[in-house]
Length: 282
Ligand code: NDP
Image (tube, rainbow, N blue to C red; front, side, top):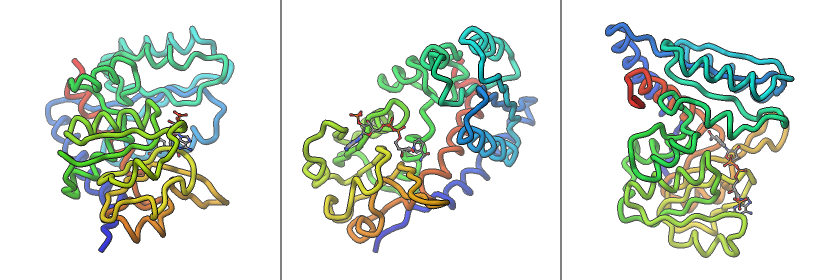
């Protein structure tokens, strides 16, 4: 029988664990705080910021929004990052993307103090991940790994395929699987035959942004499928990158969309903020 990897339930468990971590930190006089730097003008980003705020409030992490006007210059945004870098009460900093076209987003993210880079997006954080050194792991792939861990899905010695190679999801997911001793193949837009690389995969993680790019006939029976895709296909209708009905018939375990990887991502962000408050990055 196919196991449904329930992200809503996993997020609830993680929320309770993180709340206890915050209480423990409070007892030693530390209040974890996240600062979100946002340049005004993107509705999707507004929605995401509200979700982060709610998640912080639920576990007792202080949330602070540093919203800058839409016409802010690169210098103004960098100045804000430098202020937060120097501010001891700020433990974690994230920059909401997309940034306006006139802003060099890479330079902004690179300006975040690596000890506060709770999105794990700076070249230093990703470089440390590549070298298996302690670092802040990007939240979405960290959530994917959390499913494998909590559902006791073996990784070492298994064949894993990650479809997608973005710096935010695919690449770090591949590195994390490699760190856990999987044999990892990465598929991307130039992969001529996706089905051929998926055929033997015990673990399949998909982060493309195209509904149905992976379907049941491409999977090895019993494979574990982690679907990171979030695709709006109609009013209030979200589907993943994996064709769920056909994949669920073949897979041994699968994340649904919605209710799979999405809810766990923010919990991983909060975990990084708590780790930053504990001094992980120092
Ligand atoms: P990007 O657009 O940055 O990357 C997409 C990747 O998919 C690229 O590496 C691209 O290859 C690859 N790709 C595109 N077309 C194909 C194809 N036909 N066959 C194989 N690979 C292909 O996306 P993100 O990584 O940022 O996001 C991916 C998905 O995950 C989106 O749906 C996004 O909404 C979702 N997401 C979900 C999160 C969550 O919490 N669950 C958080 C973040 C994102 P190439 O490099 O060659 O162009």
